[in-house]
Image (tube, rainbow, N blue to C red; front, top):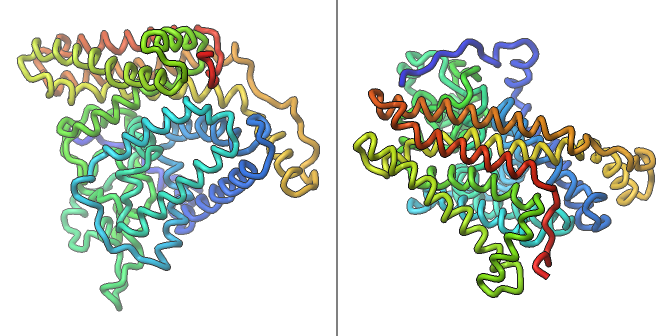
Length: 478
């Protein structure tokens, strides 16, 4: 696939470009989110333990998740740009500079995948959305993990290999309409200092780095797409040639790009990335399943089959069915079909075509998180007013306006259906592009099983949207 051209560079836009290039832009965003995180934690630990009245649960499970998916799809990896964990880590590194390198045998996504699944499991098992204090401790745990790992290991090991939120952001940002890219490849070819990855050094002190380069080892001339890019803009600040653009591009096109990527390699050769995408797609359906009433019946059937009286083993079986058995059967079946058609291996077909499901997965997450965001959009106002009253003892922002909520669930449904449809259409298009790349002479036949699988998942997701909404609660087996 040839490198697609881009028609615009956000760095050249009036006002926007200047704001993005401002050397303190990221720090300002990080400080803002750090202040919000501190307020959330404080209210989560010391405020009322009623979820709808606590900033920790409202901001985390209603607003943060919804705004996260909106930002990822509309702009890119904006929340990694402003990640407050990295601000705290950078401060700690001024006291203790890390020297160790992340172990070679862990330089894949497996730790992050395990943590991704673990957070989904713990969220469902303990109903974290209803536990302000537990949510606050989860946020503190994130800060602690980032500090513990990145004050020992150099680079951005936590972001690249450990952080489950980061992996969610990386996968979703592959659908973003923006991408950091070299403006003129010839300029990069002539560059001898490679500051974009090594960092800019002081002329009078060559050993002193005054502006760091990419900590995630994405060498700009060989960078393809947004995978593993935190949009930190360090490479932009470090480049002495002003040769990096925040380019407008065709969303999701990188999913069908088979080129070797700096710091990543070829997507079709990475089992860990394929598994990450699988968890991203099927985890979206599993997470949404917890919102609908039929899950109670399903849990009772599983409990009866295994003789369980508590939720943990039942939920474990449900996770295995949703994240292991179903993907193995569905993805394996589609890969087997396309392998027979093309005369290639099942492995090759699976590792090539699984990325075509990313837009559908993002549409499912957006439909789910969008529901919570839109139905509770204005709750942040009375909860913030209440938090100020709880923590300061004064109603500085006025009396809480508890009547401020959001859209009615019925009015959100068309938007959810639209997001699912857009995601499915994106998956159908990307899948066909992958088929053209893999089997130009038999593209339709090679793509057929994957197109059918996408439509099957779409029908499943629509069915889930039409079911009665009822958040699962612990003790549902009783």
